[in-house]
Image (tube, rainbow, N blue to C red):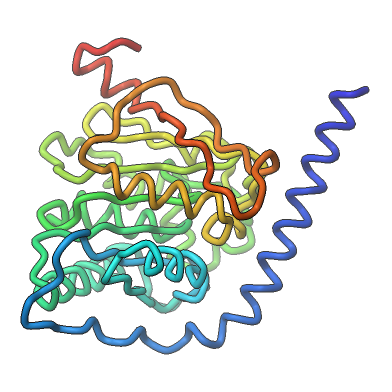
Length: 286
C-alpha cells in the first residue's frame, strides 16, 4: 500500500508539472513563431564556450527553450540560438539539411569550429540525421537529447497521417538509416530520458545505446515529456554536460530525481553511464 500511494503521488506530481509546463508554453508559443535573431558577428569572434543551437520537437518552436536559453546566457554562454522548422517541412532528412545550414552559418559568424546542439523530442532525431547522415559530426561536438524516441515511437497512432510522424515509427526508412553503423562519427551524445514520458512507446525507445557512438545515458525521474526542456534540474544538468563535454568521467548511472530537488538549488553532480555497448566494445567494465 505505501508503494502504491507513493506511485500515485509521483504520477500526480508529474501530471501537475506537465500541466504547468503546457500552460506556460502556450503563453510563450506566439513569441517563438518568428525566426530567431541573427547571430551577432564580432570582429574579435566569440572566445570560450561553443555556441549552442536549440532544436525543438514536432509542432513546436524555439519558445519551448525559453528558460533553457535564459539559463545558458546567464551562465556565460555567449551564443545561444534557436532553430525553427515547420511541422510541414515534410521529412526528417529535409529538416536535417536545414539544420546543417544553420550550424554552418553559426560557425562562420562566430569563428567557432564546432557547436553543441540541445534537442527536444523529434529535434533529437533531426540532429542525429544531420550528424550521422550528412557529415554534421565535423561541426557538431555534442548533441544533448531530451525525450527523443531514438528507436522510434508507437505513441499517438492517429498522428501517423503526418509524413514526418510516420518516419519516426519503429521500422521506418529513417529509423533504418539512423540505425546504420557510423563508427567514424566524432560527435558525443547525451540522452536524457524520463521514466514518466508517455511519448516514448515503448519506454526504452528513448535510450541511445550504440557501440559505434559516444553516448551517455541520463535517466530522469518524475518529469514528463513537455516539462523536460523547462525543468530547472534538467536545465542545470544540460549545462553541466556541456561544460564537462571533454572531460566527464564514466561511471554508474544515477537518476536525476526531480521530485526530490528543491527549486533554486543546483542538482547534485551525478555521474552517468557511458553506453554499455560502447564500453564493452572498448574493453571497459560493464
